Image 1 (cartoon, one colour):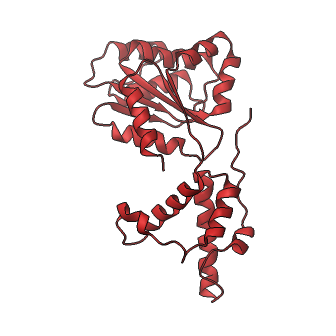
Image 2 (cartoon, helix red, strand yellow):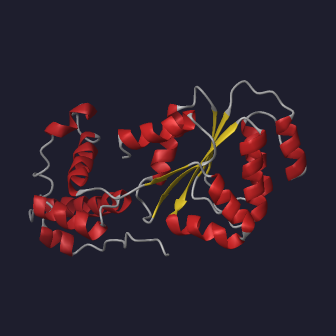
Image 3 (cartoon, helix red, strand yellow):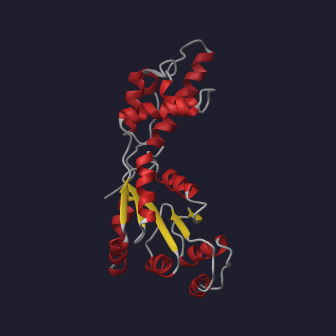
Length: 251
């Protein structure tokens, strides 16, 4: 559930593009992939939008995916495929989203820079903050690539109020309530404020962890409801749940 401000900020920098755009976070499940897919979907009429989700994609795999997606077709090598794209005419620019990048190979960095410099292509990268910091360990190529990134957006976890908004929005998706009327949702028949606060605290506000925990909690309370035990998630029930460690990064 990225904010409208997050989306607008990144789209603004795409329009003013001067180099790759980076979306990163110290947390896994905070919404990087969701944000990237929303942006690609929003701009699909203006660009050839391409999503690459393979981890540690090789230079050839990267350029071959791009060639296939724009209808050029890959050649037998990275270099030949780059040249084939360069010599081709396509009707609109490329917007390339590389999700959870694995940029530990200087040759992959060179391919991305080629697309950025020689092709009508704008690039968005997502990944963990530690992965981004580690690129400089490649050497001069990594440090040079980091300098080429024109804008960084660091995603942070939800506040407690955003967590409440999150559950209201989730409830509207499984009820007949219009989605844009989520603010009027009363969630206290599903979960107590104290239980929601505990989930927020133990998940550190990370959306993916909150979502999985709510799913587990509501499945458990549904079972208990059928046995006339309780119909509401409370702190006693939350205490019984195993909640994933939200801090997935290393520095």
